[in-house]
Image (tube, rainbow, N blue to C red):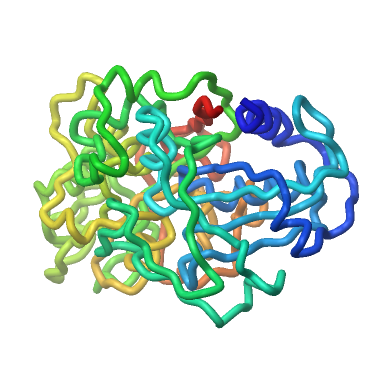
Length: 392
């Protein structure tokens, strides 16, 4: 039960103030107690920042990157600066974080008690793994099916280890990852299968450790369009359900066409089992919450994206694209409120915000009539859950 107790302590410490500690050596990291975290890619930045700023001291930790450039598996190693539960200040811990697949890997293997793959740094010879070019990992991202059956490949010194999940991070209540949003394409041999009640009851305990707001992102190269787009909730729902397929059929909240030039709408879907997809489906379609409008259309599920970053990267380079993602992953566009107010504060002021990214051809849509009124940076689907599984 040691990992369960450590996991609980980690969740309890997130958000606390950190002191200082020495940066651990590679040998210390390779011999450290390990904690296995899987789930939300939307919360990647916030979770890593919380680990580095609370469990460890801000400047004294090491990040081992498990894939380049997507970085969909990472390991954070540091010396704890807190004593809480089974955590001891001055002890080195290794936190393995897998967000390839998003919320599904934080819920399904917890519900089924199945082990999944994490990065293994036992063969690394340098702590400077962020810059390492001596290994490759294949199988990440949209269009790759490796995440669905855990058939990733790696070259030395990178390799994988299989382990059950200590802390599962979900963007939504696990019970929402059912029906149209159940991860039906994931291998039952590897991940097992779970009923709706098993998904809803995943984990032995839960704690809310962060909140998220989500938004609709559009590529800013739609001919003749003026940004930010101001679209009604109903209009966005029609787009997501596939009822409207061209931007010249889209009207803003005043009834004015977004453009008169025919430009295909290309929705960059996350795969089923994604918390970002589930909360978007709930908000715009009422899916799994008594809604009758339908659910997100998905004509090409094989090319759905496994992480927030992958979906936004594709939308950034695709004219006519639309994506849904958490606002703390907005890398260049100032946050907006969603009730017709002026743009809000820059993302530099938001938890996990990063304003130096490359998604500079994306704009956040203003969703009419939704939000908290005057609070900038607030979108739909505020939430966030953490649950962890029993381990022996």
